[in-house]
Image 1 (tube, helix red, strand yellow):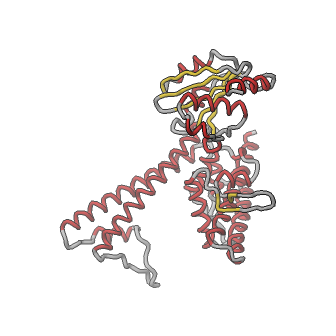
Image 2: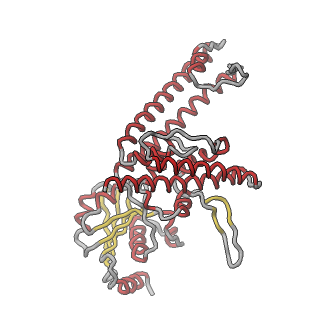
Length: 392
């Protein structure tokens, strides 16, 4: 049976289902967009290519097919713009996860825009695609801001390392110590005064040092400014309550809370802690067959930035005291505050128990990060539930 006839047979089987009457496979790029319309009742297809940002022409063309209709495109460089601009009335356009798409030799050897759009339409008709949740513009803006913070933090770190590396090559090292003999932390006010007073013997090296110091100062100022702006915008957003509530947990800073809330958006999206662990990429990979079950390293899927922040927080759990209370914002509900205290104690005790049982530190840390993600989901869900009850 040919590909077209098999598609028509499949379409005839589902024609009586309450599914869309037209499926649009959208191969979206920055400069061109190819749309394949698959009519479910007949299995016929029609393909057309548009300018990448001419969404008005796409909507007008898509309106000429039977409705209700459904469109899918791979989540990528075009973000959520196609989903927002092409969805209207009884036409729903959603992004799908490219990593979850079935692949074949044909999809790899005969790849072009028309074939990709047609394949998306056929897979959507068969129900083989995994949808990506479309956040609001406010939540997407917080995500962009969070990635900007991470980029500027990386720039600041590299600028600091260039200064320290240059000084080390010339035998200049920060050695100021506290009265108890401990080395004072670098990059504080006293360190900056010492740094500006350093004089290297060679004029060229001194000029290079001054340039590196100016770059470090600029990077620090940019990071501090975007972090200050992020605090203002987070406080004015709909996720303000959840961001404050998550900061009541040990090992969770403002940046971690902001990143988690921006990526999750709606805490009711996940029905269980297992799902959020898998979404974070902190679940173990599996290679099982018959009676053999083999678990491997974590999958590392999902948002790499959020996973890194959770892992950093989990390392901090090794230095936390379960008994000490963490200061929480005064606006947080006392019930959420008490729940955060209980969860923090469980997190620190669990981390210590894993190490006491002989679990390797990196494995114990991955398990702690996964549990921290589950606790954050539960606490954010509780905060949103209380906010909904208060609004009602």
